Length: 119
Length: 107
Image (cartoon, rainbow over all chains, first blue to last red; front, side, top):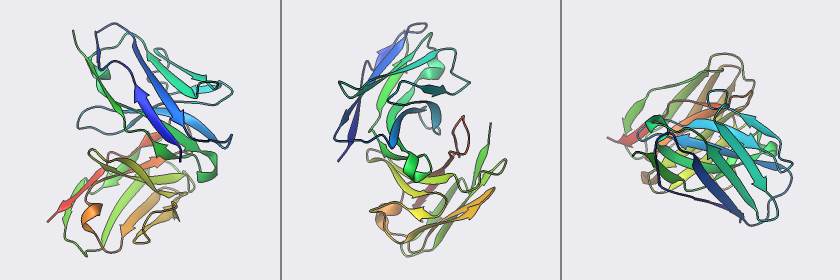
């Protein structure tokens, strides 16, 4: 049973960098890759980007200039860095597993971690 | 970017009701369409992928249909645990985009 657990600071100051880690437990084959998705309070879901175990990435153009995803396969971790944050980046951030065999649907979601941007 | 819309944005229904939610894409996405259920404190769950394939472990009362730009999620007989918010998502092209959600609550 694969599980995803997000971790990181719940409060980040404006203009600083938001850093989150997702720890993957359980087996996961090469048929999958990883995504970060966020949800501002009371709003809908926004895709941030994908990363493959190879390290190849694909980012949402709306965030591309500020975001970096990385993967540490030896520790089963995926990381998100979002630079120069503002209050608009306040959201629940989800780590997610994407399944190539499911037409690239997210078949497993983390519980999410709330990040507030405030001084 | 492919824009996704959903209707209705919310609905009230009773246990046992048949409920349908519509999702439309701004351009053809073939069948690269998924449906998710989100409950506060319970996380987000994949219900349907490839427009009409039911994810393993999902009750058979959930079904999906459609292709191209028009899609439907149907719950054949609403159960108490189905009161939640439902999102569609296209994975045809990046950026991946989601519909705005449909909240299903108790009438």
